[in-house]
Amino acid sequence: MSLFSNSISLRKDSIRISDAEFVELRDFIYDKTGIFVDEKRKYLFESRFRRRLTELSLSSFADYIKFLKFDSSRREEMVRLFEMVTTNETSFFRDMKQLDAFRDHVLADVLEEQRKSGRKELSIWSAGCSSGEEPYTLSIILHEMLGLDISRWRIRISANDISKAMIEKARVGLYPEYAFKTTPDAMRKKYFKQDGDLWRINDTVTKLVDFKLMNLNDSATLKRIPRSHIVFCRNVIIYFDEAMKKKVVNSFYDNLVSGGFLMLGHSESLHKVSKAFKPIFHPGAIAYRKE
Image (cartoon, rainbow, N blue to C red; front, side, top):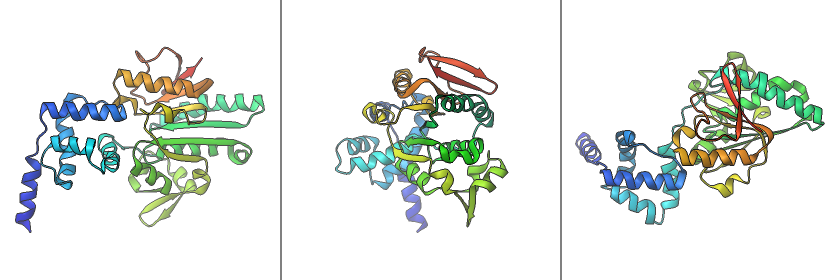
C-alpha cells in the first residue's frame, strides 16, 4: 500500500507545466472567467492543478487543456476549474471598520432616502459572495438597524458566485467555528443555533438572500440582476486585469440606481478603472457613489 502511494506521489510531482502550456491555460481561464493569472503565480498554479490531473489520469497539462476544450464532460470540469482558480477565504463580519462605516453612513443614508420617498424598498447585490458569509452579514446588519420594522420593508439581497460548491454551501447555511473569527459573539448567539460542531443561521436572516450561480464575465447574465441601491464586490476584482475590471465595474454602474453605492474591498480602488463614480470617504471605508 505504501509503495503504491509513493509511486502515485512521484507521478503527480513529476507533472510540470511548460511556459507555453501555462499561457494557453491562463488565456483559457481568462476567456471563460475574466480572471487573470499572473506569471508570478505559475508555481502555485501548477501545484494546485497537479492533483486534479492525477484524479483525471492525465499525464500532462497539454492533455488537461484538450480535456477542457473537447471532452464530453468539459462542462462539469469547468465547475471544478472555477473552484481551483478562486480563493474562498472569508468570514462573517469581515473588515469590521468598513462594515461600521457602511452601516452608519451609506446604509443609513439609503434607508433614510427610501423612507422619505415613501418607498420602503431596498435591493443589495453581493457579487462574488463565496459561501454566503457576506450577504448573510448584510442581512444581519439590516435586522439590527430596522428591528421589528423590517417586516414593513421589501428587501432583496442578490448573492452570486462563480463556484457551484460555494453557492450550495451558502444555501445550506451551516458554518464551522473558523467562519466566526471576526464575528461579535453577541451576533452569533442571536442569529445562529449550534448544530453539532457547526452553526446554523436563522431563517429570519436567510429569507432576505437569493443565491444564484453567476459568472461576472457573462454580461447577459449580469443584466438579470435587479436594479440595486448598493453593490458589494469585495476582494473580487483583484483577480482581474484592467480590461476585465473596467467591464465588471461598468456592469455595476449600469445596475445601480442613480445615487447608488459600490463597496469594494479595503485593498481595492477604482483608480485608473472608472471615473464614473464619486468616491465618498468615511473613516475605515471608501464608498463609490453613482452620480
